[in-house]
Image 1 (tube, rainbow, N blue to C red):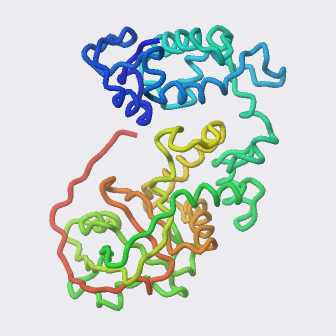
Image 2 (image 1 turned 60 degrees about the vertical axis):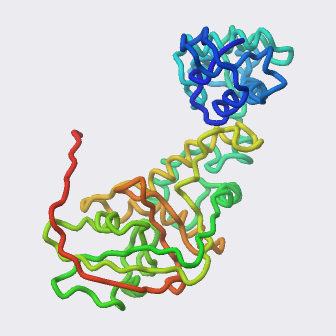
Image 3 (image 1 turned 120 degrees about the vertical axis):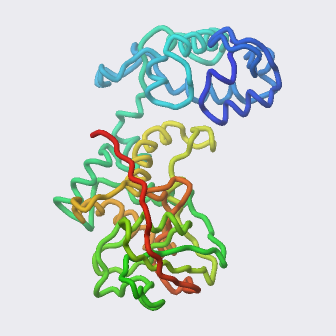
Length: 358
């Protein structure tokens, strides 16, 4: 089987093909003068074959699937691969060509997966899901509805042991001396340095990370972005303060909770698959823009995750800025981890508004 770097979007496979160092023309996607992978000649030079094996061996032909397996989840291998993973970049026809040729050369893979419809049995195995899925047999949306309408403190819809293990993989240390910014809409006289700290518990309003009555210091990595975060209007006065960490802080980086490749570790690939969607939804909810018309209840799921991080002993959470992907926000549970070193009042000039049809 011969294909090329352009046949894949997965970063690990693309890097492995490039390392082989072969340049040629691809018979699959028809790209010319590009990095080529030959499964016969390059088997000992790269782990591309091992990566493909680890995914393809998950699939079982329909003749071997349980009669209880949902029929609408049985698909041809090329369609299943495109739906389940972000590995291939080509069309269904191109994926079929790659898989069919690769499977025909393999001594280990079941040749029927290239012909019959296929499925992954563990995806609908309640015992497996209970032991390996953050949400068990449920979904993130079901969990959010449960938090909102039934019980906000205890839930059977989430496996905290698995969630903890996944969150631990995102742990980072932000070193002492790192600067962050916080802004507040003010009047012409501005706020004092003392007033730029997080509000005390008794007046703290609910936010993306904290519940009502819980003080939390929201900071941003970029000064201009923090003005956008507070939704300042043109000609508003805004006080901006600089905060500097006085110690290392241990936080969960929820902006990196979703791994771009299932090959980043040798962990169970099915477990990666069943949890990837949930993790992406958590990441998106952490960075979801909120309007003035949204309810405070919409923060409940991210507050739950943040409270769990606090329970585990972390100093805070890091997440994407709603307004600028080049920036990030940090919410610190304990404000004493930093010092306010500077503050100044500003008058906002013109703002750039972007609109999209809904």
